[in-house]
Length: 351
Length: 246
Image 1 (cartoon, rainbow over the protein chains, first blue to last red):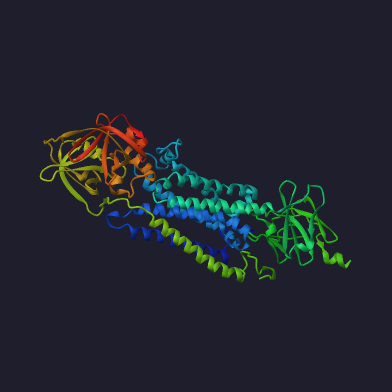
Image 2: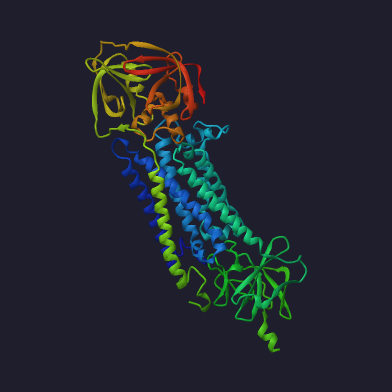
């Protein structure tokens, strides 16, 4: 919940996250180099720069695969939410590792010759007529540009100024980058590998990333779809909502509403979409009287959908009504940050 | 910590105890998976042969310069030997040696060796010293017949030891840039017994073959032409339209 923008709003979670991440990266690279140098010695030693190119490439690919698994994992099991919390540092780190790979390739494969090294990435021999002739370098280069744009705009400053939907759309480019990298590896190094390990790496990644996304999407389809707009729609008994948590329903075409119960007997409905990164507020909790997004802890007051001062984010709110113990939602969204009466069961019972 | 926060993670609040123990194990598990993956990928790499770029062993050779069409040094005498010459980076040494064709010279540089092949990387004109400005030499050429051979076109500098591995599709752009810069292209042929033979490629008229092969480097090809031997190097003079993708 940035008010004044600083490069990184460090906290204990982020510090531990980054230390573990970079320890893992360093151990990965060191292991790769050490094993290669111990297995291929003397006249059969592989070129150190090529080992570095391979180490950074496989490390970046593994990192991107894990990054893409974090989102669906967090949707399927809330214990993985801490991995999502600082995922942008993971993403920027992955970009830096991929950038080192690209720079080493440009220096050793594309430099010291005739012509511009950067131009040579796009003009080296190849055609699109067969997979064996695919100019794989171009796919990697375009993927790196996409990852660069994402890394450069990963800060909340850009999130706020581009607006959440635009920022989100831009950062969905990671899937395009991933697809390009699959082509990059499958039409490049994978063709040259006779041991099949790169093919196994790519297939495992695609199965894990694709499979988890499908399972998470299937779970999302199970969200209740209730009625059309301009009608009061029943959403069930209020007691079925766990205290300090929410149920999520879909109204109209694809508008999601989170209906929270808090302080035992209070009920309030707000948009399910966090203004920060479109996180699912309905999977959050009420903490210190505020609805708290499960992704990055952005908070909104149940009474009016506004973030507590000094923060300025606000989301749409909805009217609720109670008939017996059955709860009804008016699916017409009120303007973002609109105050409306929340239902207090205790008060209604006492009256 | 708020009462409500015992099982729900919020980044700027202390992590719930249950999650702490979960993440201690998960962090260790993820690091072990990373290390295992790194070991697996690294140990799966194949050997790239016994080529070596001897950057710590500067050597000087005496012989006769020739451009066949690529710069070579013919060493004559009791132990005749032919050394392919090239400049630093992805460049031919022709700019240093072409004016001295046929002269007896000494050349100094860093050897690149693989099997029976020897190449020498020169730095600048000071690495080439004329011994005799009058004496001329022309290597004899022995025709060996027409052949069609299948293999991969590589650049001789990287393949012989500068890049390990210096072949295959990943190395394609580098090989193309080397060949465009005048490094002799070679056809590497794998024999069924595992042996690998290299043939320096020239055009139909014996000219440099860069333009003829540059689009077909690092992919499986079949090359037809005339074999000939000069010094202890074997050349394959490519026939018209003699390069075919396999």
